[in-house]
Image 1 (spheres, rainbow, N blue to C red):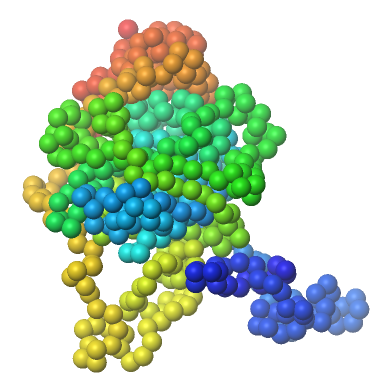
Image 2: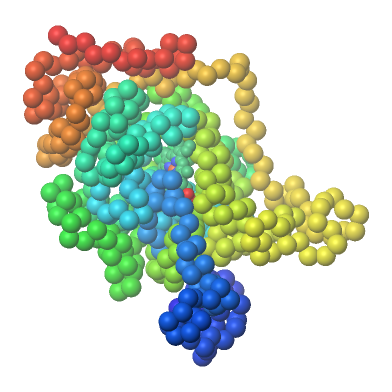
Length: 534
Ligand code: HEM
């Protein structure tokens, strides 16, 4: 097979794939012209200058010059595989989504795992959150569950996402890669963002150093909705549980692995799948209604909170198996576009302000990353069900409306029509209230679940958290940031705070962060967290 040629091929089942096709006998230009000599440019005389008319040279270099596309603004480093989701039994009681109607039904899947902060060329075992993005090619369009391996998030509102990511990525002056060691900006932001404390406990735990993607959980994070044929809604949380169980490496193992083999996780997935050890996850869900949600002090719309599994045990509803590596990394893993807004009828959003912002962000960023509005024409992003619409033109359009009418309604009976029976119908939730930039009181407790997570860990795991916090904060040069972090830890667990404070060599322990100040989100009085020492 030659590598100069990307072809669209059809596999069994009619699926289109973009892969390196078998080459022609003769090397050609992209325009199909046969090439005489691919080793020497055209020159005036044996030692003369290269001639502008050498179209083969110019085309070859031009194409090479444009090989790179922007890496993802976050989750740049990733690795993906194909597989399927299998539904255990009908969930028609809860949802009208077609993929959940029949027992044993399989839906093709494409899953991309990623780190968040590092660039495309960074190493796999950074202490970081892992992306767990699942695209399900359902008969009613693509459904993307764009999740992480940690069930909560740093922030409660999408408007803070650019600040979080600016703070975690390299600092603008030094441009130091930071994925492995801490730096002031990240901990400055975190220490000024008390809502991040629960997430920070997870990120400082062994969860942030997975042994491989195959030993990792995945979470939809937000509360979503299922909606059934009678338009009744049930809240849902999505969890992917690995069949192999959950395993992590230790920090000093991670550091060595990163040095010896920065591709450790992708090599693991490649090797497992190529040798027939197909990784598998069970989809488990927590289902609840508004009355159940109202019993908690926290808000189910707050993405910094979990619903404890002891109170609401997850129910298994299906399994995800990954059994085929992409044929081409760029065509599939790099160009795949996941977006939270992709939901089929029967799945719907909640008012989680992080989710609502994400629904804008993914489409927007992919317009730029993938070079225009036609990225759904790429085989990896195209639906695998029948589809028909009147969108046309734009950069790289591969499909356009056929025939006379490219609009609707039209008088000629041409083209697709809306369907009351099949169309996506948003859940008719009732909303009212004044427009305000205010966060509700129900989003105000930032420490209780952080504490619950910490005390749920074994003694050894707790030590890892203390060691990770000490290591990270010891890299922070600005004393007030360290102290502010310890003042938050005091609200989570005094022993932990004491240990970290001591290992950091703090001269005086700060007072616990003022939870009342820390939880004020009204813009009229935005929190300037000050540090009070005894
Ligand atoms: C990419 C998860 C919050 C913006 C991703 C990816 C994952 C992910 C898994 C990688 C997708 C892939 O493999 O291509 C999450 C989770 C979040 C979260 C679980 C919180 C619960 C946010 C927020 C925003 C955001 C709040 C912005 C408001 C983005 C962007 C990308 C991305 C712009 C790059 C997409 C691309 O270029 O294809 N996120 N994210 N994310 N996320 Fe998020």
